[in-house]
Image 1 (cartoon, rainbow over the protein chains, first blue to last red):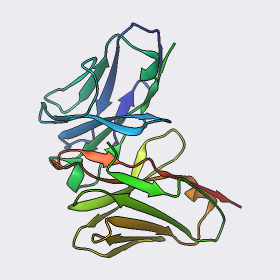
Image 2 (image 1 turned 45 degrees about the vertical axis):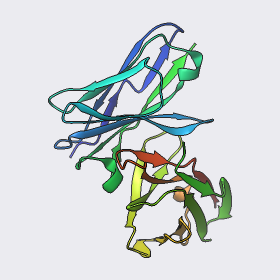
Image 3 (image 1 turned 180 degrees about the vertical axis):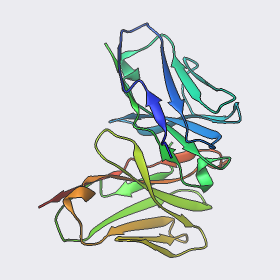
Length: 115
Length: 111
């Protein structure tokens, strides 16, 4: 079966712009989590959605938001981009309510560069 | 904040040697997971070990868990160049609602 698909794979944006990243989970998975990965901070949890509801949010400013649609696809949005938002953004899906207790399947990520 | 912390940060070995990575965590857990990440790509799940398990095997991988010491180790036997990657341990946050990763061990296997 198809894996987790993230689009686009690469993105270059200018400071102050906003960006939307997309994630299509594995068919049948209703839990989607987002992570930001940077060399300095490592993998940081952004938020998790299950059945269109945000269940948990990491310690990120309000510029970072997300949503999940009825088909489980998820989007995350970052507004007023800052240079420090440059990172690899990873999406993961899991079959159960939370990836804490089961295997999480990751997409290849979206590499965002803010200039 | 990080729940798990891996040690060492970097490890370089020759093909055929064994590689051992350690993970320490702070609070009680229901389970602990290990993931691998090849350079700049997504993470791949390796093993999930539950708090009532002490050891688990998968192919050339062996994971141990010591809940009294709040630590886990990942052993890769007979390493290959293809094992070159970063390895992360992950546990749940205190609320059990989010998977939290350590900063990882970067393994380099040379032929």
